Image (cartoon, rainbow, N blue to C red; front, top):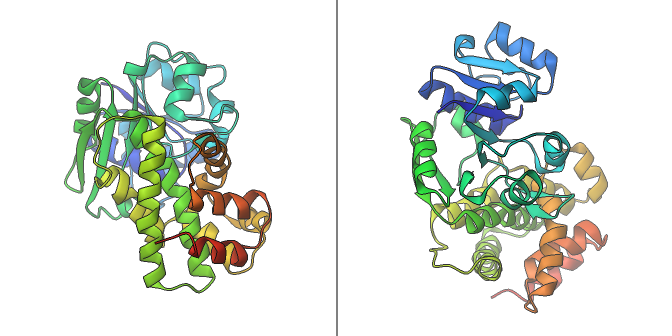
Length: 325
């Protein structure tokens, strides 16, 4: 299988690192021409995970999206969701196997990436997959042991991609819960913003544990509404990903929440972030979906109230405390 990775950020860089160690050649779409040229000549990404060294002979790196699509059997998308529609709008992906490593919602369609690929790019559902799990790019760069879940309706596709992502520091498992794992990867970013706000406001570890406990139960209710199948919400693709995003200092969503809790306005916090906070964009769509469920989702509602209704974080968090158990 010939792999092509779309995206130039930290997670794309980490995935290229893994795939290029397991394959003779990996295609890599990089929008920035200068960055692509630097990687070809110097063997590392100057902007993200710069400590990772690449063998340029194992990479076909280009700013031409069409070339990467043409040369690849499997495309791995690692472009932040706010920019995804703009990149893919004129592409032809119908004959490709496409795996999303994006943990967010496409703003234009209000859909998770897998659904967007199916409804707006014409990719059949059995050729769409998700790469998810508690795995920060920064720890991949350091080759610290991490775990990934590869989900697809076609388990053969999932298994082959999982094999190509497995190495000494990456353990993989496969799943057929493509909808549930992708929604979990999206929702955990919203809960991480709540955890960051709590930290910024001075709440301690005791409260954080209660917040995370309520978050996984809220996530379970939400995903069950979206796609009711038998799943173990305590698996690493769900609970594990939530915990690492809620607690890790590498988490950009937790960082955004922490800044807001410390007194930044939402606008200034978003502008100061050097990387995209997927949870910021996901909170609006999740809130609108939750309103249709006729059930309470107090943590999602609280994050939305701060991010989009300009309610003070301290006041919102105080009210949320009354709803947790």
